[in-house]
Image (tube, rainbow over all chains, first blue to last red; front, side):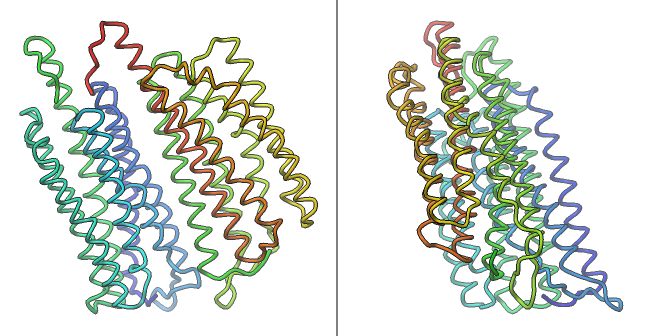
Length: 258
Length: 258
């Protein structure tokens, strides 16, 4: 850990607090909306709120750990013995990243067997992706960081392939009023997830010291907010749109929501 | 208590935090699902969430107690005067382990008298099993640990017998779409509970010092998560499946929107 200026320390501290507030508010928004969607989309909103709930908990803990990890000495923040616990991020991702893919699958309204199959395979790939990243994150060696970072890219690329090719037809078969939103949710997943490796490899290309700490902590926070709260709003909108659709179709055309 | 390396201390600390986050999220997941199941299965989900709620509370306390129990001195964690309170686990189990069996009985949808009879006898056996384990857990003597550990196995084996033989017919008579899941829930109960004696006896077969602490704390945490949150997801799925079944039987056989 390195010494930080007051501005650097505060920027990160405030980013964590902003992260907690946004994620906690998003959780309540998603759960308070459950009664407004059709039964088959309720679980999608439950899971969407679970992801932001789990992340809000971890941002609360991360903020506390950050406070404990520095002390102000003669106008600069110097590290204390209580090392900042970056494992909170990985513990969070182990739980939330698979659930993010489950949200998307649930709101697509596939058949039951297809839902189980897709959610399981994508969820396990996401778990593998996060688990492979951790040894690199905590290592001081750029080589180890590169090795695990690249290994972690294999399940990531498989997930991208599945989202564009494996689920391509299912996405194009979404009801017209929701199709654009489902495509957007898929694209936001890939785009926001692609941001994590950029932050991750920032530590492997020689960016170090206080600037690296700011880039990593603020960067991960922004990525988390887009991937969880922003993505969740899309899932919420899809569930609302498809609930309207079912209601109107219920009258004349008998095509079910899928 | 023994001195722990930073890695050992952190692994256990992070396992406790992971345990809290998972159990708290699971609680909300079960309770938010209550409105989605038929009235006769709502209590099963209420109880399922109670178990993870009680466990989440104890993991929060366990995490605090863990922080208080060690202090960082020259790069290693040395015990403080505040001894880690392992009684939290037993207090938790006294409440949650009988309730886990109640969940399973409730979701099976037996007759009222059968439900009361089975839930009472299995619940009391579970209580006895936990109470008999405690004197061995806190003893430094391997003999005492073996004695109470083996005594505790008697109610455990009776429970296993009841789950496979006493409830065997009731499980085979479950509706077809839920039968496999009920069998799985029964098997997960026995398999995850069988993990506790393994951890318990690790302290009686000479495994000691820092490694034993890691095995015991991380082992119990994994077992708790499978036995409570993982098992709870199965109970949730059974309640959802059986609720659909009732709904479709209500009409003609049109399989509802998947």
